[in-house]
Length: 303
Image 1 (cartoon, rainbow, N blue to C red):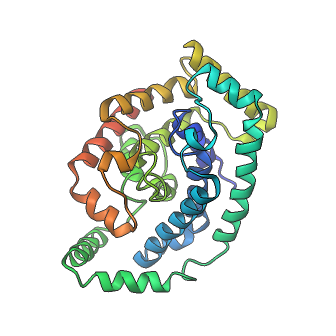
Image 2: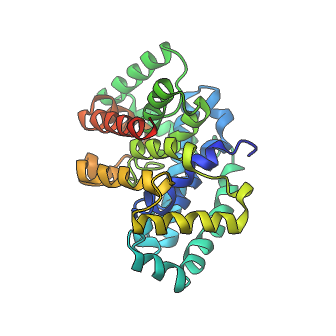
């Protein structure tokens, strides 16, 4: 992609949320690439294609979990990056290569396959099943609510990260509608996988847009230096303006405030379809409180 802003914004998703061990950055970045690859479909505003994208991302996260055992960083890489000992274990035992680099390569092959596959293919039966479910009372309620949303104008982004990013853009002038649109990838704990809370991930994207880097511009050694320095400053309590210095306290504060980083534990359920997520987030006081907290904390840090 020619615009590096989304790449910079995604930096704090590494290590499961600035090294806090939730959803692996290869999962988060992968889902964002699927949203980016099908951005044209999203901009058409067709609800069927939007729902198909959710299913496509869920297909990727399920494949990742089946292939590597977990979508969570702390379980997949087998190291606790929150501690110096964990970071040393991750680097010096070669896990950075045997697990992360290896898994990235395999994930990219899978993502290319999924991005090049039109959303309609292989998903007609799922859409037909969804249409049948609309005959139930809950389905009708969701359908009617979706129509009301559509009457207010085209939807930008999803239900979790996009509202946080939109508030930050409106109050601080940072971000873009483009970033809000592809942040649909982070809904439901990243691609409906139940991991890192999408609202928290949205707040991290806003911080990454300011403190992140474009690895292509920095080069391999510049990128490695950026990540290594960020971790070391975190462990030493230095680097007040670095990405880890601003992002990590936000994630730890979130865990302290809400008890977990994972969507499935915060909501007490999993979401198999976009309609389920929409119905839940529309009326959930829990999600409302989380979105407000994330936006306010991110705005406080940015200001």
